Image 1 (cartoon, one colour):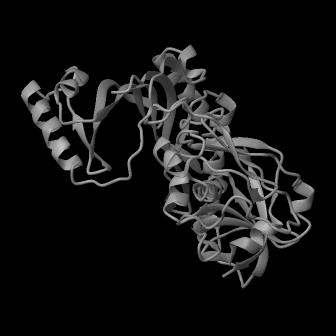
Image 2 (image 1 turned 60 degrees about the vertical axis):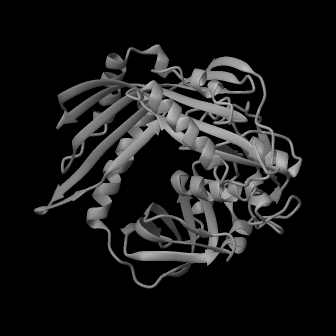
Image 3 (image 1 turned 45 degrees about the vertical axis):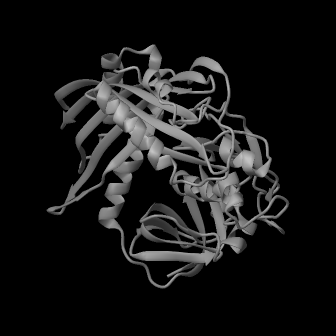
Length: 424
């Protein structure tokens, strides 16, 4: 790959620059009905450049990509064009991060295995869940990734970090009564845990089975709703985004520091910390795309907003502490028990078309593709319904379990229960 910084330094039109490089290595294994069909190894590098130019009391910026095939003359042309484009951007001035050299590695046990060995173990864990008479896993694709991320800028930042990821794509299938139902499952983690992988796939096997037998229920009305980790992660990410410096700077936030998402809670009080890294999350990092070292920040405590976080640029605009662009969120455990869940009828959402959240209009809802309805005596799989409620109301009643899981960028209780949701 061409030395990009050499040519950026040559251009006297630029005030500053930043180079982001991602070196990707992967080992990929493709299975059809337990048989290993194809193995592939890849290696490639992505490079993007951000050019900054101070002009007319403002800061302009423009980005472009550099490829392995990019020649010296093409690179000079790209840099010159970026400098011209930057003159058309009129951001308020700020200083990009300065100094700091580091070479780190995200905590992960993936590095303890050779890729071929690990792929075989992952496949074994997946197929350990393939033990249903009418169910099968038609296809499995396993990807073992190693990524080295490097950030360099004109102010002396030179940081690199190596991270690891396992991604599993599977097609659980249920065949019964001459009909077939399929699901697509994509599971990502930075930790190899045989039991956790088997449990994840087993859950999907049960889901595809229950989709085959799910029925549209009679009118339910109001009921407690249980959300699982995927939807909890979406809810927490949305609340956390409202605490981002960029949201505050553009005056698009709903809550300010001191305001409550929960004002008179009858359930568990939310405690949320924005973190650079949480165990098992592929979003974990020690620095962000600017090269800013990440600093954890508690943003919700006792249900109230207690802090904000965000990138160097917007922290400088607001005169706030630079935490970096934190992408992981950790929620403290709650008090909800299995016995308490069954005290009243409930709907446990297994699959939604997407959790619908509107902080500005105080709304939470979603179309339910599969759920388990407990009517007080028995539990049945249901489909063809939706849920709706006022976000402020249901947050007051929120109760969470004490079992902690990792889902994408979220680490916290595996289930929460919200009271007073309308089931349509």
